[in-house]
Image (cartoon, rainbow, N blue to C red; front, side):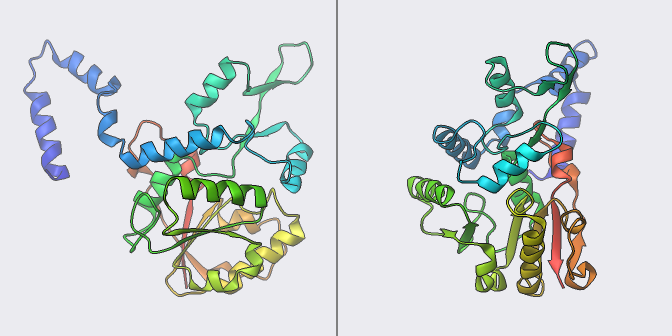
Length: 286
């Protein structure tokens, strides 16, 4: 049944409900969890299993000591900040950790007082919600988009940290993704050929907490020089404008990319975080 026909059928059922029962029916429709199973796919289950596997292999902050630059930048932040991996820990999971005393959403501004402030959370990963929005609503109907959501011929992940490369390879092998996923242990600035051939490039908070500003500028210049295939797509979090605003580069955005407007209202599931979705930006290479 197509959307319009389904909508008419639902409205007909509601209108056919006796007046005495209608308020209870509407309350049930607004609050029930009975529809959840209709929007949870096997792919979601696989991703949640991967997240559980990773939680069991990583410290709660999901960072290795080998990530020196990122750890140092978090500690140098003017306000208290913690790294909470959005793929591993959704809001409900964070709430449970807070209840167990393993994590906190706030900090004391004056020890011993009741003056508290909210901790800033950062993540270098997409949440399940963001992944579904990206692959189901942001990217157009390509030959393939992501391993679990379509049949892309080849997916490459470029990772500088050897510890995370090893962990990613472990997951790729365990979940039998090895036929189409390849993890490249490298600095992206050594992968010109990969960038030049890519149909879609996805970048999520990739540089700010790992490189100093001069290195960030160098990396963005390299990407702008090599991501040049006309019509190819670039996804970034945050926007290119925000990422480049504090850097000194020669990148002319209006000569490189065209931003494509996204409809953030299409994601209808209950776990929607509109603010997080609005950080996702899509560009077409000119």
